[in-house]
Image (spheres, rainbow, N blue to C red):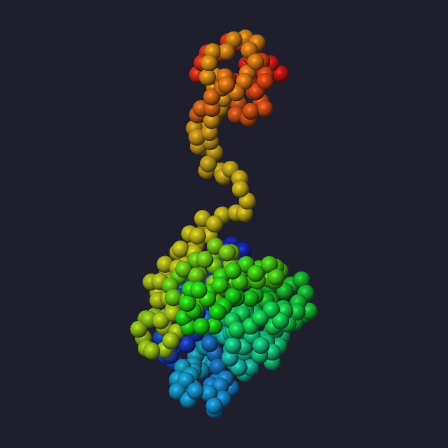
Length: 336
């Protein structure tokens, strides 16, 4: 399984963001892999860190204690990667420190950099050296910083940057209110960074924003995932999709992509069978005699389309034969 092939074939790469919703339980993390796979997600993503290398002693003590509790070991992450492989779902994890990044490089082919670290260039430089797809969330940042990141990758990978860098529009709030979701940032990022894939990382309640992002042709969709929204007071559970919601989201996204279709306006294949019965042709509104000059007053447009329908094909021309009122006027009836 490869992210580029999935995007090419399915038009979107859907990530179930498990994050730390396992709360330090390896068994729960395993179950999340199984459920995400059953729901049809393309990938499941966790977060890997050593608390002491992630937050300082002046960080909120209660939050730091909880982070320590949420830690999984490197061996457990390795096992999760192997279980994911068996379940045919891509595994990757966001490293929140450089040591964890170096470990993850041994077991995954995609890297994610969190919004909180999109200006942590020591980490970004290490990850960019791995020569792997790097997905970066763009919460709490601006054009100047994104340009700096993009230019680093462009200089290193040149024309191959599309396979090495992706930006996800993201708003760092938990949950983010609808008025701040700002999906138009996806459009902006697509225009500004047109040679890389742009996606969306969702922190809102429900699936509306993800469906909107799909309509805006986001290539990567990341949705927080939990087994049970009521697991604990940990904030991420409430803004996450449970298995039922994730499955519904993936179904709706795929239906929406199918309905989205192609850019442009043209007669679709399935419409052609209805063309003749729904479109009109010119019929005579009065009896026409040979050599009569056809005027608008002598015509009426009626279904079906069996004859002429463009005005300059018929107006001002003379008729070769008598045509009774209500009859179709065919091209062969007219003098050139």
